Amino acid sequence: MANSKYEYVKSFEVEDEVMPPNLIVVRIDGRGFRRFSEVHEFEKPNDERALNLMNSCAAAMLEEYPDIVFSYGFSDEYSFVFKKTTKFYQRRASKIVSLVVSFFTSIYTTKWKEFFPHKELRYPPSFRAWVICCASMEVLQTYLAWRQNDCHINNQYNTCFWMLVKCGKTEEEAQEVLKGTHKQEKNELLFQQFGINYKNLPSMFRQGSCVCKTQVEAIVKYSENGTPVKRLRRKPIIVHSDNIAARSFWNEHPFLLKELGDFREDINNIKPEYVKSFQFENKLMPLTWIVVRIDGCHFHRFSEVHEFEKPNDEQALNLMNSCAVAVLEQFKDVIFSYGVSDEYSFVLKKDSQFYQRRGSEIVTALVSYFTSIYVMKWKEFFPQKELKYPPCFDGRAVLYPTSEILRDYLTWRQVDCHINNQYNTCFWMLVKSGKSKSEAQAYLKGTQAREKNEVLLQQFGIDYNTLPLMFRQGSSAFWNEEEKTGMYENGASAEKSGKKVVVEQCNIIEQSFWEAHPSILNEKPHMV
Ligand code: ATP
Ligand code: ATP
Ligand code: MG
Ligand code: MG
Image (cartoon, rainbow, N blue to C red):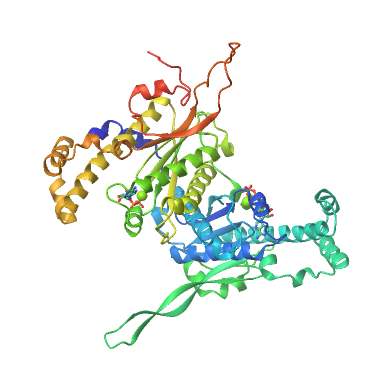
């Protein structure tokens, strides 16, 4: 096949399976939520609706992914614990972490209106995420204790801080008052100055929230004579507890004991070496091109449910392109991107120091932002169509050591676009002319490119090469430096009129594209 020459680039994709018996935990955290909460006027220190929205998203997550058996969150973060025996996406870390963050973002953006009916979403919320491997139940227990301890410390501090600010202190003064104070002193300050008994504050603020699963009897169908057929089903419920790492809490939930195991004993101190392992992050190799490729999850179904035109829905492609432009504008280290169908590849510059090259953060920030924009812009591109369920994308980072290999990667994607589009065009023409899907499939099996073009021309009068370029070549989004706008009378050249992101349908396989845009890969023009 024509593609095979470039397929070697696939070998740069590395395996990242989390080996059993490690338990898989995914933690997500809002990106820049300090600003997000200010812009959206969250009540301080705790906006209850914002917390309820987070909880509702977490519950939706447990509903969507049965392998997630427990989750815990507070403020702008949530942790999701997978069952011991999970085989979810073959336990591949980047798949799991990107899907979780994407799905969560999608739900958050979709549900915003439900929780804030009077507030517009001013800009797309997004999250970062990490996989935390817990080698034993004791490690998981420590992880949970660590997160809940953070919740407690933050909330106590924030409660004091905002009470001081509300009583007239500046933020700097409030900070100064609290500097170096202990727990006990903070509680006293609250009580003596403001008459607040910390223990009486809502448990959701002090303890964070958990999502567990409970069994309920649900009607699954009706039998012929109309009697309901009931089955036990697991339904997520929100619970609060002052110590989620305690044996007593765990023992109240037989489902957790079954899917994860039990805690041998209560822990009194959080081992620092464990905490260090929770914070450990892999960095991507320096001075290599980073490509983050995202791909729509189950878009075959998504495109059917949303009645995309086949084989190519132009508006759906325009929406993807528009999201890619937003990604380039938001993440300045992304210098080029190429997209087709439900996928987009983002190239980060070789010497990028974005998130100190921590792979998980780079991938999840991009995929989360992309998802958020996709949901927010949906109505703009499909004014007549409701979003029936939240779309989500997976993502991975792949490293390429040289520009030649990077270009082979991009070539691989564009060749793939061509092969798929040619096949899909034939397939859908055959289907539209009355063949069943399996007949169309059988008809095209083993046909070469030339034969497909003949089918199109002879049976349907379509000259493949006249189809829209966007369908045949995919789209590239990149920063283009605009031409100089002209010369002033005194002969001095005008300032460059700024850069902007453009979307073009280009042949990125050929040398000429890269020669015409030497700044993208920072290569010298016309090298021979
Ligand atoms: P980063 O991108 O590094 O995560 P961040 O701005 O999100 O930065 P965090 O340390 O994650 O900072 O803290 C989250 C911030 O979001 C808190 O400072 C808090 O002010 C705000 N926040 C989140 N949820 C709420 C809420 N329900 N009510 C009020 N404020 C909230
Ligand atoms: P996975 O979760 O493994 O990615 P998938 O269902 O998303 O599975 P892909 O191989 O990614 O499968 O293919 C994407 C599918 O989405 C295509 O088969 C196509 O049917 C559909 N699709 C995506 N974008 C469009 C579009 N613009 N117009 C029509 N169909 C589209
Ligand atoms: Mg945050
Ligand atoms: Mg897909």
